[in-house]
Amino acid sequence: MIEKNSTLILLVDDEEFLMDVSKQIIEGAGYNVLTASSGAEALKVINQNQKNIHLLITDVVMDGMSGQELAKKVLIINPSVKVIYTSGYGHEILENEKNPKENLAFLQKPFAPNDMMKKIHEVLKQ
Image 1 (cartoon, rainbow, N blue to C red):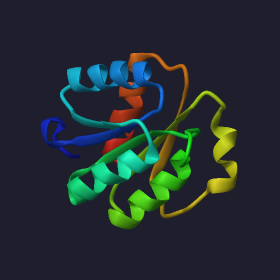
Image 2: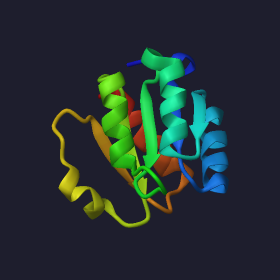
Image 3: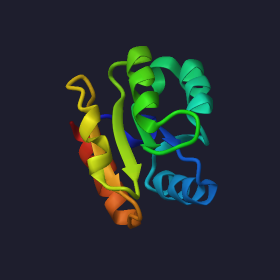
Image 4: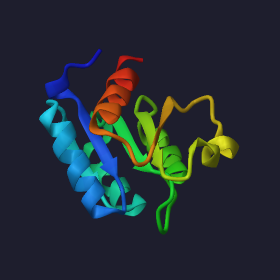
């Protein structure tokens, strides 16, 4: 398992308040967090940090580029990145997007801080 203080998480959500609160919670648990409010912005962050991103946490439904599209592009750049999708629509939204290459998990919105951190720990241990 990767040490917390060396783990870099990219958090992508077009809901600024939710992204800010989630970032505070994750940083409070000892992780390093970069944020982006869109898929295009996230790709810029990924390109600047290539192999340093360990975990992508992305909203599924966003304007411009969906979380699934973003994850596919991120995994081309860095296949070792783990993915947690978040959505208020339920995991069924991902049913058509099963890709065995993706090391992904799902977190239903709204989620409690403890649920988010439990999912992050679980995914990073894989």
